[in-house]
Image (tube, rainbow, N blue to C red):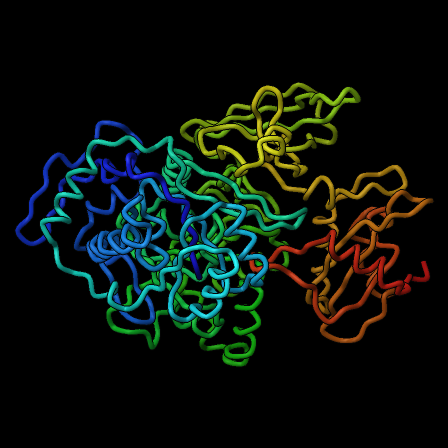
Length: 578
């Protein structure tokens, strides 16, 4: 993990540290704990839990005070590197998330070098920050992009002394309102085009945190097992900044290992100082891998089944799935193993989380719930003149959902493209004003590009997929690739699948399935299985059996690339007899 920073001039940094008071550490006392405004950036809140453990990683444990002190020390180094033209606060990754007037652009070591260089140049970063593990790669990036590089060493982990300078910095934090200033640039996953830099202000991020802390009942007693990438909203806001905001603990694993995750979830063979896990968040691919590990390690030991289920039901209060569609078979298998109904939600880099199943609800699989507090959504259809007609508009305030229907529902459902507005919606795509304008309607609603269904009877929303990719137009019908995938995945011999629409002169698009089997079965057998589960025009006409389906780090399939590879390969697809 490396971080780029877009530095703010020093004249704005003079009041870098604002609103942090009431810190008790050693002989220092700071007063006036609560600022008058309702929204308080996460790093301001950190001082309220100064002596509490914030992070646990493979090296050791770190308090909120450790992080703030180390951040102050690193700010000096950054200032020196930039000839005192600016100032900032960072600490490994977490320290770069806490700064006030610093654009932070997190990237992953899994990105190819060319992509990292693109991020560095596109974001106009002045400084690259990394750790020794990735120093060779980042030295090359630094040379090619002509950016200054700082390689953190372990000395920052040992920063524990409160100095007079630190106290003065904290005092200075009281005066500046930075909520409308830029906080993060998160690059989109790029499944539908080249990645764009999503600019989030401190107000955007803080609103996202406030919303999720309330919706998912975060408290200082929580401890989350963090395995998610730290260059996406899921890993940064949902799983890192939310617990840091309330004084909870983050147990950080260096990488995803199914066995290691089971060990931590069950609280066995971990370090004595490692807290018991109460919250877990992951993408569907991770849950699939955990189930595979469960089968290998525990399936033949019935005695341990009940132990695992009881342990997880009583000690872990919340498990969340997101960032990619969760199939109903996967949901049901996880429920059978753990007793947990995975909470599904919907969000994206540009808007944070906007739909979520209610914490106390039955969490019906396949649905992503209702709008989160303070978020408004609407379903629309595009008219011939290019304008959008609103089919439905919905807002939640204090869990009280208000729905305005402008059309008569078809079969108890309203389907349309999802638009979102609210204080969590991003500011802009960095240096791309024309693209930014294109993604908003004339009345300032953000166009997600996703097709969504509202069930009038259930009063719940369901995602049908990307309008441009997952909504397949075949023979005059519109079908959802995600719904077809769910049915195919319910076959016991299917490990994975992806549905795409392949261009066709006769049908417009032909529903085509990429399928991974765990044993040999015929395509005809699969089609027979599907006939009783979906309308005839949903059933794939052509198939490609593969050993794996490529996905990005968040478990998403780049379907544009999948179709392109298929068409360019000239391979003949398998067709069923009927």
